[in-house]
Amino acid sequence: MAASPRKRPSKRLRRGQSLVEFAVVALATYMLLAAILTFGFYFYAAQGAQAAVDLAARELSRTPLPAVSVTTKTVIYSDYTAGDLGLAPAEKDSIQQFRKQVYDPHYLVLRRDDVILPEGGLNMSFVGQLPTVNQQLIPLMVRDEIDEERYLRYPGAIVADDNTADDPAVPAPTGYLVMIPLVSERSALGAETIRWVPVLEPILMANSAVPSMPEDQFPITSSHRGIVALRINYPSQSAAMTSFRPAASSLQPNIGQPNVANDDLVTTDPDSEYAPEGDLVAPDEDNIHRTTYRGIYGLGRQQALGQQVRPFRRVISAQAIYRREIFQ
Image (cartoon, rainbow, N blue to C red; front, side, top):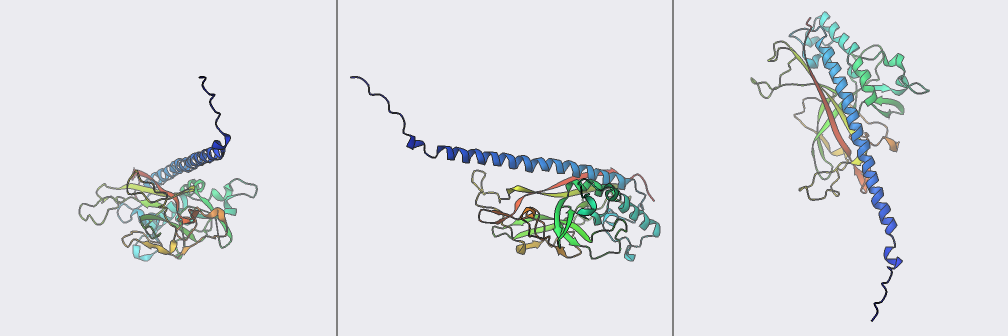
């Protein structure tokens, strides 16, 4: 008996096959592009931050400053004009020169029209007046608007500068500072606990005499006899990837556990060493393209999974250590 010919498969069995293939390819392509853009910028930001902190530490090590009476925090952040610090006029002048030539936290938020020419490119006549470390941080800044005025700013939370006593004269500052929130705890409802760190942060080392009080190694009376140890913190947030809480097991999916964005539930760790001295300022929120770093804490928001969630975020830290070379 002759074998019956094999039936050709019906076209109905393959209906929708092209649509499924397109969906799989589109998902894979999106994930590939998101990873390239996100982690590619992380490498770029890490190199920029490392170059900037190396420059800051090297120049601070060669700035003539008192051997004992000042700390790294005094040089970088404190109001050196305050009488309670007990600084001599020559010491105040040295700190002022460091902020004028090397780094000043008042220049972390810049007016965009001052930095960028109308035809494009940097306005070098303005940029050349900035301290050298602030110049190196410009490529790492993001565009934003505050009260309908355009700015270039360092990522993080914007803080109103309530103390103008130590403000530089030229170029005139914008009146805004930047602090960076580090998220230490998160809940499923969006409650987040943060602690604050500055952009340029002194590295404090363990104190054997008083373990609860880390020691600044800048004075020559410290255990390491005078070194400059600095860290630059750079919060980088992805416009293409969402932040998720880790699953209980590495084999369990966490697609249903995004980090919900709710600035009203953010609290500050009471043990945080740093804290904003002025009021937090929220950038304008009428533009969908400014969602990555939006919010009063600068933690960002995205529309995903039917709710507002946090973008994928990593705080890049670059460090540099130099021995002090010149004393006043």
